Amino acid sequence: MRIRHPGKVCDRLWYLGREESGVYLLEGRDGFLVINGGLSYIVPDVLKQMEDVGIDEGRITKLLILHSHFDHVGIVPFLKRRHPNMEVYASPKAWEILQMPKAIRTINDFSRNVARRMGREDVYDLFDLDWEDDVSGKIIREGEKIDLGDRSISVFEIPGHSSCTIAAYISELKALFPSDGLGIPFKDIILVSGNSNYTQYQKNLQRLKDLQIDYLCADHYGYIVGEEAREYVARSAEAARQFRVLIEETYHSTKDTDAVARTLTTLFYTEHPNYFLSPEIFQEVHRQMARHIAGVMEEKG
Image (cartoon, rainbow, N blue to C red; front, side):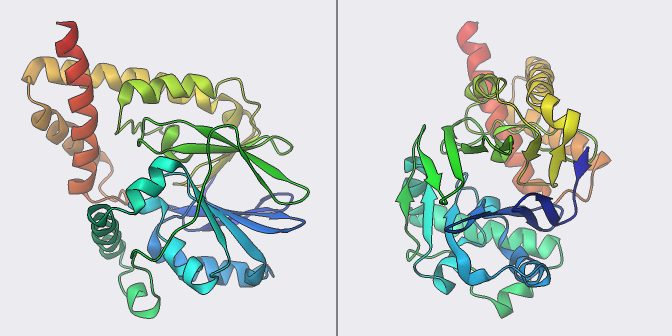
């Protein structure tokens, strides 16, 4: 079952933000951990939701970035400036990217693009949201854990959607936070997004298949519970297989990755015109996937 409205997920775990972009707040004995950075314009929603459920914002001591794309780091600068002692964790590759001036410009440009698309650009007049070079933090790697006193969060490196994607897992809750390393649970479908390296994306889906999952906590479009959560890794793998076939067939007929990207983007927005990403951003996602798959096809001859 897919749940898209903010609220309590289970014992001491909350989903905050909006349907198209959320973050998770995990309470431990030693404080709160924010999991994922979301889109920038959800800041006022997150602040109000914490107030409504009686969460003391001052007890947030840690934040975990699951990957460095603009729609997953948006509230990080605001929270870090508001709470300078908060520890921010990300993979080595994510910190490398987040120090690049070009990447910072892209994060800010794309964040405002989506804020305009969603009618939320006024949030930038009220809050300090832009990324600058003042945000830094700690590196976390495969196999390491974040300790909250009576709870710990394990980390898996699962590049493929991006070169820096990690997943987090809480064994006592059987809760997986895969970022976009699994398919995105949009409406009643699974969106595949192996942007960085589609082949690696598919391989890392297999790495997660043996985890026990009662709560599949996605970054976009809420979380999933029950039987669908337990089946979601396998269903994401099948969706990825089918989408790869579609890309291969489209490229075989055109021999043009730009044409593939345009075709797939047009097909998607014809059916789903209100998806949160603008078509030009999503077309670049399709272009990246098409280029990788086309390269593999050409190498095989």
